[in-house]
Amino acid sequence: GFILSYVTYGFYRLLQDLNKKIAIFASTIIGIMAATFGQVAILLLSGAMNFDVLLATLIPFYLFISIIEGFANIIIISAIEKIKPEIMEINKI
Image 1 (cartoon, rainbow, N blue to C red):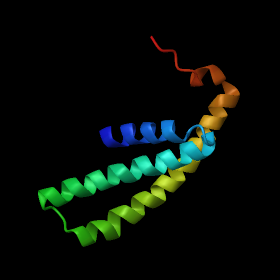
Image 2 (image 1 turned 90 degrees about the vertical axis):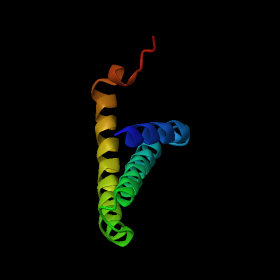
Image 3 (image 1 turned 135 degrees about the horizontal axis):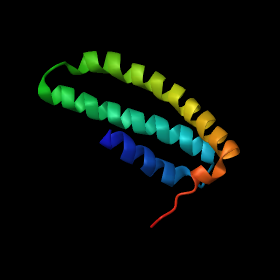
Image 4 (image 1 turned 120 degrees about the vertical axis):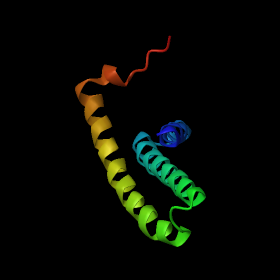
């Protein structure tokens, strides 16, 4: 969860000035794929699986999931902005 959260937030911050929907979509994909590569690294270091099996199974699966989740995040965030926009404002202490 650590890799996913920080990578997604970091890339969203980098891309948000271009286009908000593209930033949401791209940062979701990049975050999930970064977490997937972290998971692959952990599995390789532990010796649980070999690299070929991990590339053939985890990477395509999580790429597919990340694309779906990217679209879902756009829909959810757009709906929240229309229904209750004050939720999207971050109040810093």
